[in-house]
Image (cartoon, rainbow, N blue to C red; front, side, top):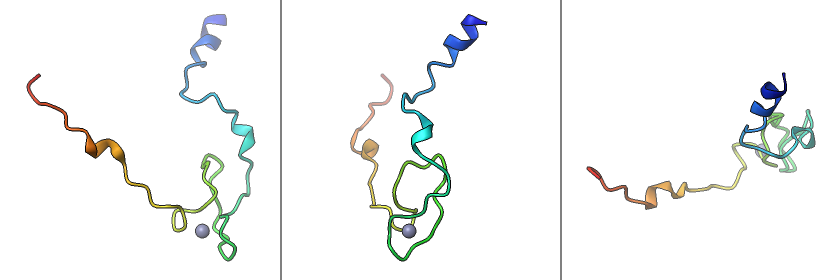
Length: 64
Ligand SMILES: [Zn+2]
């Protein structure tokens, strides 16, 4: 039993999911888009600030 509980520790996030309650809506005034309970953002997809993934900037050498 104890070992099983330890395994759940590595989930990728330490933050308690309680912080993000249900029924939240987009922070945009005129937008009432519901945000997912698991979505940490304050805005919906339509109003969320555009972010470009930085993964593309790194070139992975092939054949190494
Ligand atoms: Zn919105």
